[in-house]
Every structure is written in C-alpha cells, then in structure tokens.
Length: 171
Image 1 (cartoon, rainbow, N blue to C red):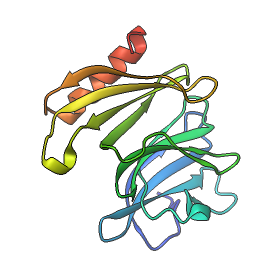
Image 2 (image 1 turned 180 degrees about the vertical axis):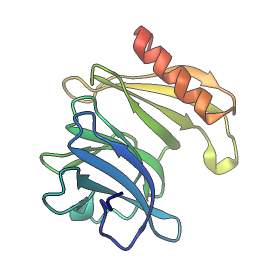
Image 3 (image 1 turned 90 degrees about the vertical axis):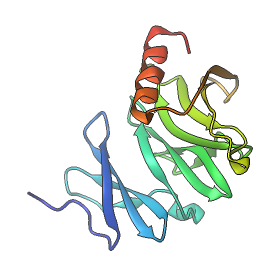
C-alpha cells in the first residue's frame, strides 16, 4: 500500500481518471466543506487542489470526462449546490448551473458531449421532487432539457437510470 495524498484533509472518496494518469480525491477539509485533490498516479509532481486559484471553498462528487480532460463536480460555493466543470489544462471553472435550485450527481455521457445531473426544485421550501436534467456540451454550452421527473428514491437507482438514458441516446 502506498499513500498517494499528502494533505491534512481526511480522504473520503477517490475517482481514477479514464486514462489512468490522475486520481480525483474528495476530502473533507472543514465542517461540511469538501475539496477535490488531483493526484498524479505516477507520483511525479504535486497534487492540485481543484479550484484553489479561484478560492473555491467546496467541491465534491467528481466525475471525469471520458477523455480525462475535464471533471464535472458539485459545489455549495455559490449559496446552493451547483454543478461546474473544471478544465485540467487551463484550470478554468465553468459553472453550468446558477443556484436556482439544488443540483446533484453529475455524470458524463460516453461521447463527452452531454452531462446529466439531478435537479431538486424548490429545495428551500422542502420540496424533494427530483428532475433528471441533460445539458449538451458541444460548441457553447447550449441546450438544456428536463428528461424526466423523479420522485425521491434510492440515489444509486437514479444513477443507473441516468446511464441507461445516456447510453441509449434518449437523454
């Protein structure tokens, strides 16, 4: 066993990149805030805290794009939970949502042109109805579509439904 991370935070989750060059390590940094640390698997170079150059306080649930160039993640940095993309080359963050409701569980399509995630409307009023949302990422971040309204259920089943829709091209 070899220790891969060298930060003071408590590691809670790891997601290897599809090309095998990186680990996205989710760690609890303080209170309820999480950070994502990018760690090279070959042991060379320092680990990178995702969003540090943007003073990002919270990042969790990393999901690598199939080409290993970007990471979709969720963050409560802007009041409510939103979805953003982190570009590994430029270290830019592109916010896909803007706190109009809470968003969870980003998941890439195998073609890297779409991202599906859950939306919880009226989260502040306690409404827990979930919607599966799709965002096309080709060209400019353009079209958005609500694929299906879901009632609260087992979160792992929602992930399976999302993958089935993406693979069949229905989302």
